[in-house]
Image (cartoon, rainbow, N blue to C red):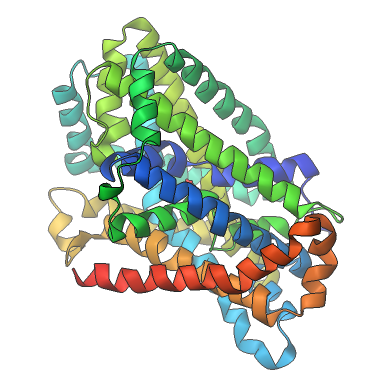
Length: 447
Ligand code: PHE
């Protein structure tokens, strides 16, 4: 069977498109706000540099040398007596679980595109009411947009790596960069910019709790799309002789750059109009629309542009969340792409509806277990547990199970002098850090 591969630029755009998502523009600013700013940003940046880069390279390497779906790649790269390793490939399921809450949130962004074209709420109270009504009462509207997301994502992935995913990213990534970039430039001209800068880059260490540290690590994984075989699956379609080091650095730089730009822009707007940065998940859906209203006509334009950017970022990540499972179904069970896409799509579509119900007033209690509703559980279990676990498995696999010659053959030349540092970090530092994070989690769970 002939497999369509990414072009070099196509791969970088698709991997960056996967990394840059709701995580950067919706989640990063609000968790930074909730966790007190600077110290949290610092913890996140350190994790991205120390763990993120090391692991992204390892994940790319597995895909690039394995050349198949994640399960098969682990299977072929593990020495024969270690056949259990193939089960590590099932980390790809995390993507479908993430889509359970990710797709409904993309749905909200679509709703807000329409809203900002028509009429924005004129005060924070009204915006709050609007968002609460949407989320807790208006199940119908949410399901409507969720359905659109399901159809769109399924359509794109059914078209394949080249004709679907690469094309989508060629179109939406420039849209995202231009829109976010122009809002950022405008933000630098406002007085609030300085406050935003201070909030994000002057750490107050007393605000760094172990819970926020775990959130920072979980978020570093989430935002870089690490630990669930997305980067691995995309890398299986890399052209031969690709430079993995260069690709990972570009993807990480774009992802971190866009998160910081989004954070600074949003906080500038919020400070400029006296809104609080710590409004939680409603930050971009409540405080921001009200601020856009205050800004007058330029604000109305920005609102529209902003939600288009947010939706674009979300959609290019969404396709990457489902692709690993699709590749698995196609490679292992010879599903047609259409059938595989529909199966994966229906999974997140149906469970996504449950997530929507779980945050509604009427049905919420039915889908609340312990301290969290179903929606929050999927977010917590995937980002804080599954992705770091996937990362741990990959670091152990590439660092201790795969033969070193195989690793060195590809990466020694590309990393040059840094190779021994990278390998050491992969074998010891990253697993140790991840074990600590995961153990910490047990404490947090008990709270
Ligand atoms: N990185 C994406 C974001 O920041 C989410 C994602 C996670 C995508 C894991 C793929 C894999 O929104």
